Length: 149
Image (cartoon, rainbow, N blue to C red; front, top):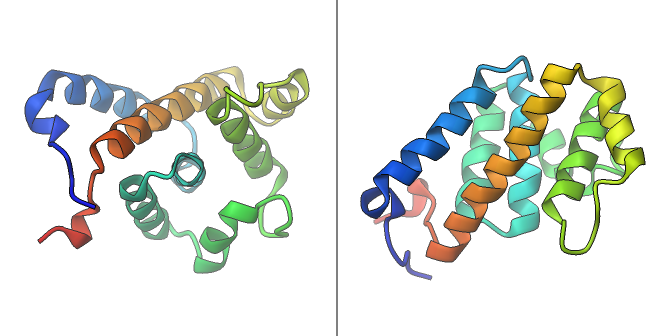
Protein backbone atom coordinates (compact mmCIF):
# COMPACT_ATOMS: atom_id res chain seq x y z
CA UNK A 1 0.00 0.00 0.00
CA UNK A 2 1.16 3.50 -0.72
CA UNK A 3 0.87 6.37 1.68
CA UNK A 4 -1.97 8.59 0.49
CA UNK A 5 -0.78 11.95 1.81
CA UNK A 6 1.30 13.63 4.44
CA UNK A 7 -1.07 15.16 6.96
CA UNK A 8 1.91 16.63 8.79
CA UNK A 9 2.75 18.71 5.73
CA UNK A 10 -0.84 19.52 4.77
CA UNK A 11 -2.40 19.97 8.21
CA UNK A 12 0.55 21.12 10.29
CA UNK A 13 -1.49 23.00 12.92
CA UNK A 14 -3.62 19.90 13.55
CA UNK A 15 -0.45 17.83 13.98
CA UNK A 16 0.88 20.39 16.43
CA UNK A 17 -2.37 20.23 18.42
CA UNK A 18 -2.11 16.44 18.57
CA UNK A 19 1.52 16.75 19.65
CA UNK A 20 0.27 18.99 22.47
CA UNK A 21 -2.01 16.20 23.69
CA UNK A 22 0.90 13.75 23.49
CA UNK A 23 3.00 16.22 25.47
CA UNK A 24 0.38 16.36 28.22
CA UNK A 25 0.35 12.57 28.46
CA UNK A 26 4.15 12.34 28.39
CA UNK A 27 4.36 14.77 31.32
CA UNK A 28 1.82 12.77 33.33
CA UNK A 29 2.81 10.32 36.02
CA UNK A 30 1.86 7.33 33.87
CA UNK A 31 4.96 5.17 33.50
CA UNK A 32 6.41 5.23 29.96
CA UNK A 33 6.30 1.42 29.52
CA UNK A 34 2.62 1.36 30.50
CA UNK A 35 1.84 4.25 28.19
CA UNK A 36 3.46 2.42 25.29
CA UNK A 37 1.46 -0.76 26.06
CA UNK A 38 -1.72 1.33 25.95
CA UNK A 39 -0.72 2.91 22.65
CA UNK A 40 0.30 -0.43 21.19
CA UNK A 41 -2.94 -2.18 22.15
CA UNK A 42 -5.18 0.55 20.73
CA UNK A 43 -3.09 0.59 17.54
CA UNK A 44 -3.42 -3.18 17.18
CA UNK A 45 -7.19 -2.96 17.54
CA UNK A 46 -7.41 -0.11 15.03
CA UNK A 47 -5.08 -1.77 12.52
CA UNK A 48 -2.64 1.13 12.34
CA UNK A 49 0.63 -0.35 11.05
CA UNK A 50 2.50 2.93 11.51
CA UNK A 51 1.55 3.21 15.19
CA UNK A 52 2.03 -0.51 15.94
CA UNK A 53 5.56 -0.24 14.53
CA UNK A 54 6.32 2.99 16.40
CA UNK A 55 4.90 2.02 19.77
CA UNK A 56 6.35 -1.48 19.81
CA UNK A 57 9.76 0.11 19.16
CA UNK A 58 9.13 2.82 21.75
CA UNK A 59 8.06 0.18 24.28
CA UNK A 60 11.28 -1.76 23.67
CA UNK A 61 13.25 1.45 24.19
CA UNK A 62 11.33 1.99 27.45
CA UNK A 63 12.44 -1.43 28.68
CA UNK A 64 9.62 -3.75 27.59
CA UNK A 65 10.57 -7.35 26.82
CA UNK A 66 9.75 -9.11 23.58
CA UNK A 67 7.71 -11.62 25.58
CA UNK A 68 5.40 -8.94 26.96
CA UNK A 69 5.15 -7.10 23.64
CA UNK A 70 4.16 -10.27 21.82
CA UNK A 71 1.55 -10.97 24.51
CA UNK A 72 -0.21 -7.59 24.43
CA UNK A 73 -2.73 -8.88 21.88
CA UNK A 74 -3.61 -11.77 24.21
CA UNK A 75 -3.11 -9.99 27.52
CA UNK A 76 -6.10 -11.64 29.20
CA UNK A 77 -4.53 -15.08 28.80
CA UNK A 78 -0.93 -14.00 29.42
CA UNK A 79 0.54 -14.17 32.94
CA UNK A 80 2.94 -11.29 32.26
CA UNK A 81 0.76 -8.32 33.25
CA UNK A 82 -0.07 -7.02 36.71
CA UNK A 83 -3.42 -5.71 37.97
CA UNK A 84 -2.64 -2.09 37.08
CA UNK A 85 -1.55 -2.98 33.54
CA UNK A 86 -4.61 -5.18 33.06
CA UNK A 87 -6.91 -2.38 34.21
CA UNK A 88 -5.25 0.06 31.82
CA UNK A 89 -5.41 -2.30 28.84
CA UNK A 90 -9.03 -3.26 29.60
CA UNK A 91 -9.93 0.43 29.71
CA UNK A 92 -8.01 1.01 26.47
CA UNK A 93 -9.89 -1.76 24.70
CA UNK A 94 -13.28 -0.57 25.94
CA UNK A 95 -12.63 3.08 25.06
CA UNK A 96 -11.26 2.07 21.64
CA UNK A 97 -14.19 -0.19 20.72
CA UNK A 98 -16.98 2.26 21.52
CA UNK A 99 -19.08 1.19 18.54
CA UNK A 100 -19.43 -2.35 19.90
CA UNK A 101 -18.64 -2.00 23.60
CA UNK A 102 -18.88 0.46 26.44
CA UNK A 103 -16.59 1.57 29.20
CA UNK A 104 -18.66 -0.25 31.77
CA UNK A 105 -18.79 0.72 35.42
CA UNK A 106 -16.80 -2.44 36.17
CA UNK A 107 -14.00 -1.43 33.76
CA UNK A 108 -14.03 2.15 35.04
CA UNK A 109 -13.95 1.08 38.69
CA UNK A 110 -11.09 -1.36 38.05
CA UNK A 111 -9.05 1.44 36.49
CA UNK A 112 -10.07 3.91 39.21
CA UNK A 113 -8.92 1.41 41.81
CA UNK A 114 -5.44 1.22 40.26
CA UNK A 115 -4.81 4.85 39.31
CA UNK A 116 -5.07 8.20 41.04
CA UNK A 117 -7.63 10.61 39.60
CA UNK A 118 -4.82 12.52 37.88
CA UNK A 119 -3.44 9.31 36.38
CA UNK A 120 -6.91 8.22 35.32
CA UNK A 121 -7.43 11.54 33.57
CA UNK A 122 -4.11 11.05 31.78
CA UNK A 123 -5.18 7.51 30.82
CA UNK A 124 -8.41 8.84 29.28
CA UNK A 125 -6.48 11.47 27.31
CA UNK A 126 -3.82 8.94 26.26
CA UNK A 127 -6.40 6.53 24.88
CA UNK A 128 -8.33 9.28 23.10
CA UNK A 129 -5.13 10.66 21.59
CA UNK A 130 -3.79 7.35 20.27
CA UNK A 131 -7.20 6.59 18.78
CA UNK A 132 -7.13 9.93 16.93
CA UNK A 133 -3.58 9.24 15.69
CA UNK A 134 -4.66 5.76 14.57
CA UNK A 135 -7.54 7.13 12.57
CA UNK A 136 -5.24 9.56 10.78
CA UNK A 137 -2.66 6.83 10.18
CA UNK A 138 -5.14 4.31 8.83
CA UNK A 139 -7.01 6.83 6.65
CA UNK A 140 -3.80 8.09 5.02
CA UNK A 141 -2.03 4.70 5.05
CA UNK A 142 0.97 6.10 6.90
CA UNK A 143 4.03 3.99 6.23
CA UNK A 144 6.38 3.10 9.09
CA UNK A 145 9.59 5.12 8.92
CA UNK A 146 11.64 1.93 8.74
CA UNK A 147 9.89 0.95 5.49
CA UNK A 148 9.94 4.22 3.58
CA UNK A 149 12.06 4.28 0.44
